[in-house]
Image (tube, rainbow, N blue to C red; front, side, top):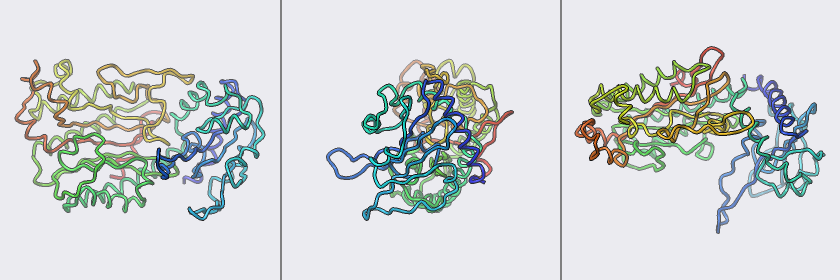
Length: 435
């Protein structure tokens, strides 16, 4: 299915790229796949990631490749294939995407540029500006802001090929999540749960779209928890992990509990799952993502009031800011080549930024929902002592049941996250059919 959609994907990429170049005053562009770099005062290379704009065209892995896009011409893809006995150098073979390009091969990065015939109005996108200058690219054409803004904006709208890649990545991640859940219920440690995840997803760590979050009990209240403890037999697992397909990454979070977990926390997990589904049901073209985020705070206020954590619910709780320490992050983000994909706050195709309101500083998406967008919906409720500290002694202290908060704090937190694609009249949830 993915292979069959690729030709139309490249044609759409060409159409958008030609329009973006014309609007920004260029007659073509060269996109660089990226350059490896070495850690300071070390001889170890950092993990390599391709330039996102290059990855949006082709799954070709590795650094130094060049993609030349010009109006009315087949894109030229210059593959740098060095002779090297230190690292595996696999032949290109006949991948499904190769037919879309005029492919040339060179042994090194310097030779790659000699394969291209650049006009005076060719733009360059990438992380090797010195090489572009040496090849004759004008200074004003190196990573020009207006062109980059238009390319970012275009990536907000996924082609059917991209959606299929995200869907395949979601299925891989779902297999990992189900294996992780089984390991957790069997008493496994965070490290063992992570191992179960990557085995089921069929990858190694550096092939994940981001470092997995595998948090037992109180560690679930650390939003980007990175450790993998050997402590076993947790009562709560919060796991946030994805997978890749052709460079596109899924992003799924689930929270699981054991039979002997605190019953109020179990009810909290069930409640967050219900309200997450309700938030997903509201997704359709024309919706302001900020409105969806605000609705999430209202639902969380009502849930915490129902469970006895808050003495007020609804608008009264929101006016008092009672949900802010319990739900301190944004509801979601764009998804694609980058897990936190670009242009979530972009104002228009030519650029500009629409920031979130001051009381929601970490909201990554302020756009109006449109067909073709892919994003996450991930409400959460956490018991974070640092954020709750100011509420304990302030004027709002009597609006929170602190004995219940203290009882639930060892459980950490709950987050439920699905990946959605917006359709012409609603949305499609890529995650729920899988997990």
